[in-house]
Length: 386
Image (cartoon, rainbow, N blue to C red):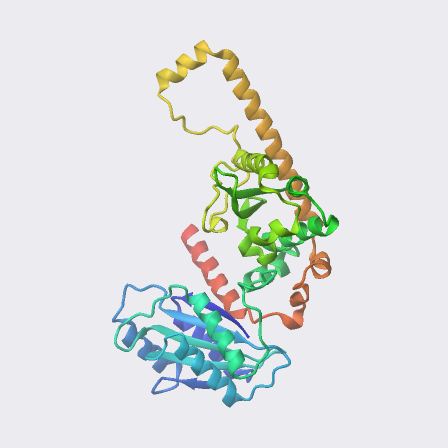
């Protein structure tokens, strides 16, 4: 089973989306906690609970649980799984509705649940995705369903719904998928590649590396920078983490210490804000265009700067030359990254990626609800612009 969680503030939109499918005969209600089952009555009951926490913005979850096409699940079993999923995640005294959809080749259900309990307490969303994943793994074992590899154990992180939708729209892979393909390509080309060769091979493809290197030379982590986005190895999958990678390539700490340090310097030269040891660097995309040669606020007093300019012309000339060299390297890496992004298409993705078959239309998850939310947001932006 796979689960997708969306925290939202528009209960009405999600409700109407599911009720519309019921009216069309492509969905049915498995269970709910409301006294009267009508749109108007449900929204009134939700409002009565929500007034206890008027300042809480994202007060409900819209969760979809997807089963493999091979699973045969009667409504009674799917309902039981849905109820146990809610209970295990802490939703014991909360409003909910459970729908089963029949508009895809695989069984799946949608659950709308209020994070605000009947007594006004709010279920914490801390580590909610990890908690949900653990519950799904436990339910798979309990009901002898097809077991899915957890994200922590996966050799390659699978595509998300957002990535699938983006790739269908643009016909190009996401940064994560492109990195997985390019890195695997380098590793598969040379089974005995040294650390230095690995670094330069990736840089030739527009990927710079950022190692979490201690002053002793010990490396504890790695991140990859591609087209302005820094993504940690853990976010790509176990095969791309340093703990796995150092045993895959020919790596020696003392021999490769200098090469790794220089690689970090090159990455920072065109991404000054990049730092090793960042917990979630990929959550803060850094534009590659921020080169060393750009104008940035000086940290020295104005009069000292003038004195330096007057007494050390050779030093300033050298700095300007270094800045031009750094910018030249930055532009070269940008061009390489741009070229790599153009050579990819869905055909390449399907052939070269472990999860490429997921992009087939029959395996597409139900994205209509997400698209409806996106359309509403766009309309709001247009109104504000006008």
